[in-house]
Image (cartoon, rainbow, N blue to C red; front, side, top):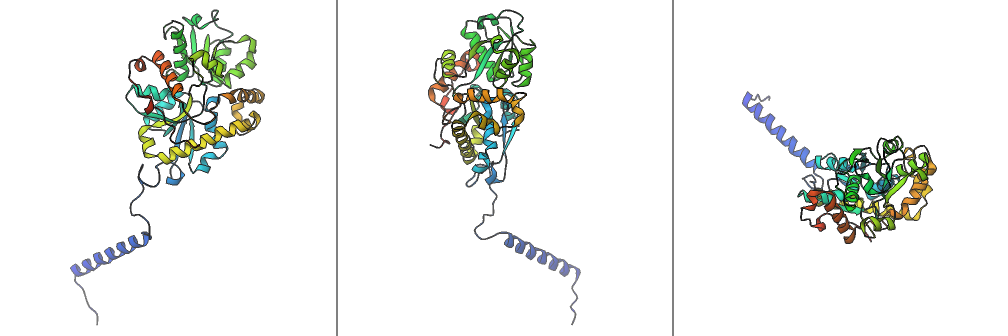
Length: 364
């Protein structure tokens, strides 16, 4: 016998069938022991960043070819980020101030830059925190161009000169202003020009575009190779303990670090721990291997035209790398003292240094 249903009955039957099907599909998708809710940033379980959470940590570097940031790239070459379970995407932003801007704008999650910027942000009432240190000496050098437009034999002679820095507002700029004030000059006594940190810096000094510059290896060593080491007057050199003591009056001075916003660190503590661990492991690897072995793990283009100069630069820089990744209180205080003399906004602010760095993510 055939039963004929009216239009309303057919519609009701169709809705019931659809509802039963949807419930069945949901039950199939919900496996035993799984959670019905997705992971959220900073929630229990996994962080928002890193391979465990299925995401990528975007890391901005304030000048990737520069040796002060070598551990950041070397950790990737050694596979230590991947080994820790973090997918890291390195982005060369060619200047510390640009990397900081990228963090503020949200285009990167973490910055490989100078510790200075955490204090600079604290003066603005914003929490930015360093969580692993790569350099115990800042390794910046103030040198005079062989084609300077006037004789320059001391920092005082920079009055009215044009001085190159990686970028205005960068740590090289802060260093210049500190040295000028230390010698009794105004921080604005010299005109500042952005020349980058790699080949462009070498060209600017070699061609006399600037009278002097705050440089970082391997660029400085490459310039010395091109013009002759004896032709380059060095006014301040912080690549050694002696140089740091002379410039800042301390034995250690935190420089290149990994830092991020306080919010990101709070939401992603395990990812921060993995990144810190990868850098700490890289720092130990650096101490145990030769400059040749280190150079072999770096992108070949970073060596420029002369690999020998690059290897020699790494060999000279090895002493500047932190042995353990820690930021020490006396070093942090020294950075604050320098910035109070370099940046009026920092000079007039009350800053809690404990909110600008942490060693909590470091292993033993």
